[in-house]
Length: 140
Length: 140
Length: 140
Length: 140
Image (tube, rainbow over all chains, first blue to last red; front, side, top):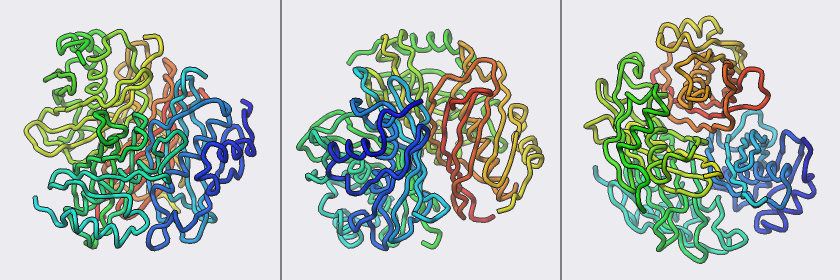
């Protein structure tokens, strides 16, 4: 299975389509099987006590798996998130970037499914786990 | 079952503990069985095309059920979201506030569970559905 | 919105397509908005202590929402369960049938979404909550 | 991290506590990080067309992660499944056993979280993915 987009192309796509969040995310590594995404944690992502907010971790999981899907089907597809199940397991470390390791489990005609583990950089235990489903428009 | 906090107290709690998001949310109605929360949609919540972003809907679901839990156990408890499953079903209408109708399904010693339907204001069909679990610290 | 199948037709469909489980399930009531299904609890559904097993409650949730989908699109569609998120909230009462109250939240061209509350008969508090997604084949 | 129970002890526990299902399941391999469980597919697990039913796959996911939890905390704990999110991604191959690869992601005082990939034996692509949460009683 070959890649339809490389890391640079994914980041350009993000900058063009999602200008509001592009500064938060960077593709750290990409292969046919997995994508690792870094989220630069800023003040706006924090809750009192310095922990990263749930919606911020949701956003990271969503964009990481979404880009893993696009890396395989290319930028033409307008995939839409239809389902997410996320477990928040540990409090993220304060003052650390988050790293999301996403893998694509299914790439069908109608649906793509992936999952992700999120880590505080440098910590061995995941802070969150998520599975996501995307609907792929019939017209592609 | 009586309420431990009313709508005003919940909003004060939100303003104190979550100052970054308090302007987005307002308690529309509250009973022992249900809480309706309004999310004022601003530019920062939007994706290209005018639709509300997934993380914004996640945030609304989370805060609505969270406040429904607090309305019953009071502000002392430090409940933490442990799981969310969310279905995105329709594109939210552009230029509309969102309304979340949350209900509490279980309030145990260790875990609280609730679910929510999210609507674009004035639309009959829900745009999203979510179930959330919160861990309640033993020390309460 | 009108019904494509009534309760009797749904039960005949179940008997024809799922003979192994048809004795467990009965449609209690059906409207365009909701379907209530009874599960007759037998020895095979129980765990030690008399409680109903998780897989049995999963099966009830699945068949209740599935039939709610079929009541609207008819027996021709070969819908397939693609996602389930289920919360087990209370121990079911021993020696009681289960009642599942399913509602259809979305019926799209590709995906149908519903959710369900499961009760021990005669008890006011739900024992479980589930959301289910079904993929509907393009050929219908 | 050491194991509190080995594969043999887990199977004995299953035989004692869940006699109705013990013949279906066998621990294939066990380490501190992962447990692989085999499900022997019998007629009762099948749907028309020879595919394995959703509730059977749910049961496999549940028991695999449950035993992974017990392998670490021992047989005394009465852990209860509180949440499951499962994605059904491909039709299982007919006439094949299923293999579930479970890993434990969190083992806290109150909650344990794990996830699992399910394969038809000999097939490279997973048929299902699930995440499960278990509540661990305070008294342990």
